[in-house]
Image (tube, rainbow, N blue to C red; front, side, top):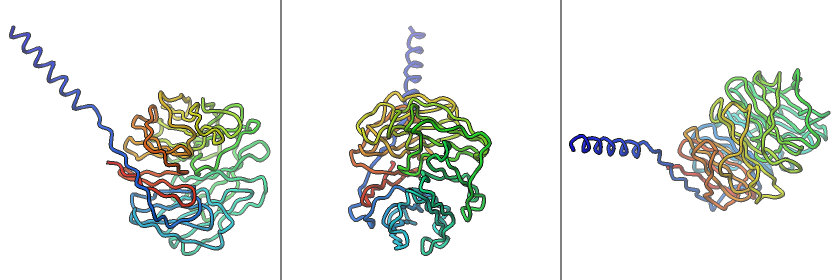
Length: 344
């Protein structure tokens, strides 16, 4: 009898420990900004740290907050006709903006958007830049839709002060119809000190281009993401060197949940569909560095707590782009639509 009692007590303590060890997902709250300082659509969004966040888009509006609350609209008439779909910032003073469309212009500021210097210009009508990213404060890379059956890639080694066309040794040719998407500037991501991933779509398979030496050599792998016209990878994020998530789908069929998300646990060598998907087409995905993933698109906002394997829909409000820090983040979209993400 005593032995039975002891066994029962040990079992209860064991169950208690297991209950205590179960993770509790944080609460995610989305707070809309009713008086946004922006009027035009925004797709570029970048967080330097928890307080300093930049945004960019149409109408010459460049946004900056340095307290994670109040946004300043630094509108420049020079940019009225440009659509800056990506922005990368190094501090509250230094940032680079990238225009998308037929041709490309990159500008850099070192005084908090008070003035801008043109650091790259390409007037080729076939050029359409989709995104850029940096490994560190000096070394970065950007890519355009293909020219002569290959992605057009440029790089910088001086913090974006100058850019030049990169001539890879073995960049694979694109498929018929294959290209990137300039939905949020996050179809390219730099990982570590030399790895870069580029997501594509539009062809008969959606793929990820991978380089481990800053774009000099490339391999390409297939994914189970939706394929065909307007379909594929629109955004990606890596939580570490092995675990990554791509999102997208088809922006013309935005309610379709088939092939709108895929995950990798081996550094992008293989990709699998998640157990449950986000709600429809997604244009951006971000992580907070602490186990929380947020994706957004035309159908609202979804969250994952398990590296993208399962998703929970938390809002029907649509946005183009999102960024996260540990306890907060931002969403931005059409006509200056703006919301803050609170993680508790």
